[in-house]
Image 1 (cartoon, helix red, strand yellow):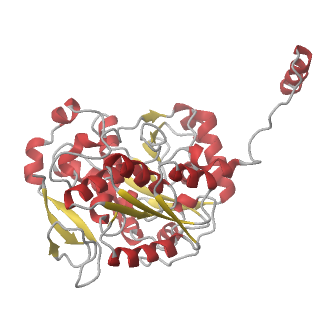
Image 2 (cartoon, rainbow, N blue to C red):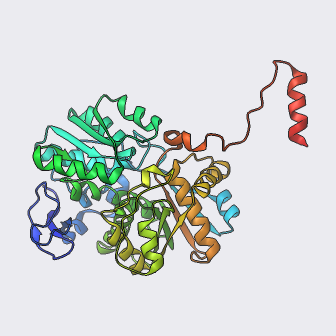
Image 3 (tube, rainbow, N blue to C red):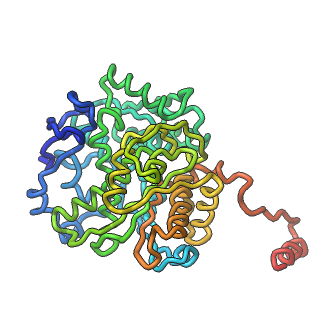
Length: 411
């Protein structure tokens, strides 16, 4: 058996058994997984973790499964890159990039949450999995669901980038493109989830699914030599990743792996969809929904489910929230690529550009250690760079033609 003691409402504290439910029936607050940390502390030690396979499941006692992992056995444990070139460009002493563009089967952090969600769906006895997605989750559910033998229904906004649609279709799920934005897709999926007995990973399985994001936080601590960074910058769509990275840090402190925890957490958004960063900058607790209008489609959630909780984490840790224009997003993608050789999708451009802005504003101390979370591969959103890269040099197949180009480059 696992180490989960139950589910608990994040608002009123009412407790529930471990079932595929996600909303408190009394106050309609979201449910969260609760663990028996005293039991976990006895078995999850640095020494035991270091002996295990390099995947997200090396922290399995702090994940909401009862038996052994069944899905996503090779997901997780992505590189933490010491980004010296980028640090020099931004004028900071020590900067790291948590690089979720590689190592995952579908090249985004969503392989973390889906590994946990589909393992839990197996334990609950579901035969069909589904999701509402802005792209990366669709890929992950389609791929992992195929390998695990599930029937799959994937719902996306019809305006999604063509490359992201193809990246789901190759796994042959039932892909449904909805004429609307993500928030409208999600509302439709909530209706469907109430009628059909399917495991909607980000609806009725959401309390378990969201816990998978903690593994990014666990890995950051381990890869920094079992210590927490001074600052961490996290991109926000629903706000869940930010809250779970912080929960991971706190859990490692709870079970004694971390001795000190003084990390500041920063939220990164695109200006065209920035309800979380807007609330933080205005100093209010109310998240005002917006209609998304940004090239960073993977972050385009206008009514973020965990937005309020993300603002509370930022407030609790003394961090901040900031947002950047689409032009800055593209420049962020290019900056990371030319300094560190990492090609991030638009969400990564948001995080890099936001980090740059936070450093310039003095919100992030230049002499501290900062980790920047990059969540998806740039091959997924190449459309955003069309017409915004350096030119190709077209030449005839002879040396004179090449040397003519070389002369222009040199000048």
